[in-house]
Image 1 (cartoon, helix red, strand yellow):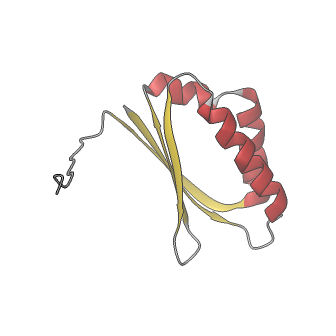
Image 2 (cartoon, rainbow, N blue to C red):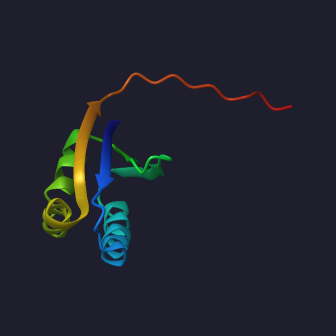
Length: 103
């Protein structure tokens, strides 16, 4: 498994409708990519967003990162949407699980 964490803050003057449309389209496209496992996004009370995607392999995640439509929206994000962001990646993360036994 390969994990990508995209931690970001939006600009104050963001075009929310345009961002929402791009984000929805990218989520749908990512879900159709070979090696895609899952995607979730969380927004903190202070506005910071954590987007977490899981991929079968690092190669699958890199292929998504270089997909032409995704690359176009990434450039738009830097120009128009994001104040700042940090991207973290991890290949074969150490995983601990807990599941409550059936009652």
